[in-house]
Amino acid sequence: MFQKDHPITLVFFILGIAILFFGTVMAIVLSFSNLTTSLSFGNKIGVIPIHGVIRNSDIIIEQLINFRNDKKIKAIILRINSPGGGVAPSQEIYCETRRTTQKKKVIASLGSLAASGGYYIASAADKIIANPGTLTGSIGVLMEFVRIEELLNKIGIEMQVIKSGEFKDIGSPNRKMTDRERELLENLSEDIRDQFVTAVSIGRNMPREKVLEIADARIFSGRQAKTLGLVDGLGNFRDAVNLAKRMANIKGEVKLVYPEEKKRRSFLWDLLFKNLIDSVINRIDCHYGLLEYRWNGEFNISN
Image 1 (tube, rainbow, N blue to C red):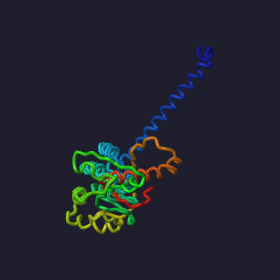
Image 2 (tube, rainbow, N blue to C red; image 1 turned 120 degrees about the vertical axis):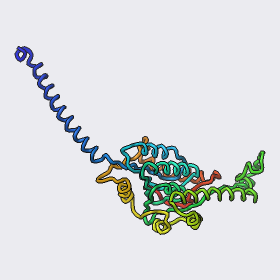
Image 3 (tube, rainbow, N blue to C red; image 1 turned 45 degrees about the vertical axis):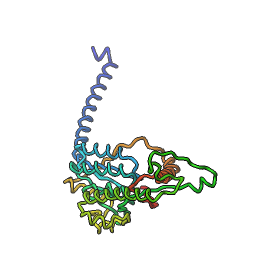
Image 4 (tube, one colour; image 1 turned 180 degrees about the vertical axis):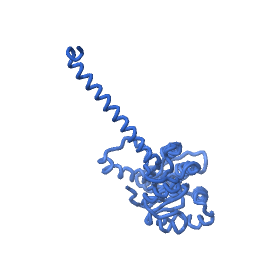
């Protein structure tokens, strides 16, 4: 009766059973596939890129905390391509890296450039891997000012300043710095440099006297840095990955996990404008009179 009176219904019924059957089979196959994948890539290594001038620490710190709390992440690699930057952001990332090493192994992989604040951060890692030609080191402090006094005089502009203390307008661009101001800033710079030396000494487990011998802001090649004890080994990013695997006792293949990226600008924007704008911003930043852990040389650090 059912077959005679409702042939179309019967067809749909049979099709539904077939779809349900094949759907169940596929679900089982996929579940086993996912299980196999999870078994193969259950061990993960987090990779945090630190590129360009270090102006803010919030994003890097958030990434460190996320990877530190992720049980599937067995080790963390800091991939550094930076000339350094602000003192406080560099110190904040250093502190969070040191905190992370108490829970997971952290390896710093130095790219083309990891100088000043870039090396400051790297020194907090358990191990540092650099290329033989990596530029690194530059243990020192930088503060720059612009003087436009003569320019203002030529165009007939005079600046009037009312201040509550002798040093309130220290570093003003419209007048020459006094000897007392220079002495004050030099003492400040020396204190910030001393903090850099202390951080490297603690992070690298090096005698303070040994760090002081090379803390004149000079840069080193990766090979020179290896000889001086500033890095642990020479190699590329894959060598850093292999080291992370050994230190975390990972066998077999691993999955490299990068932080989720926000919506990226177009390739054309990056190609035509981003590098130019970054260069202009870097030049503007260096005239704010801020103390920085930054190497001031010109070097291409793009990947």
